[in-house]
Length: 110
Image (cartoon, rainbow, N blue to C red; front, side, top):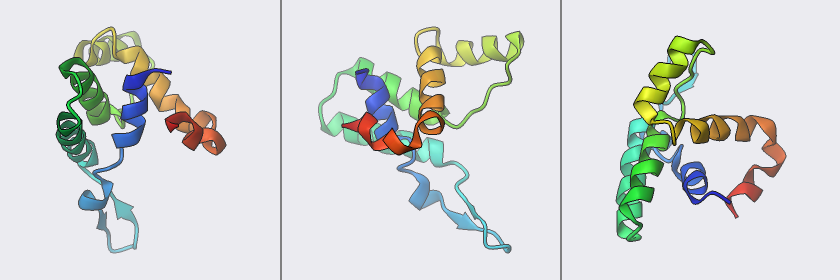
């Protein structure tokens, strides 16, 4: 039911097509897609005339969606410092969604 999480799910990988590279072994890589997805989300949400608070939260989560934090107190404090106490729990919730229930992934965006 969280609007910010819904938009984060929608935009988090939109930068992948533009950032796609293929190495000599045929493996695809998407380095920098978080920043590109953030740019796309920012542009689209502004065009949709979303409120600034939602835009700020969604774009920040989209940018950091692929960053993995070690489960140590120091690493968690650093991540919370970057994202803020309000957004860090949303990032944790977001990062578990696709893994937890891939069959129902599309149902989350409805």
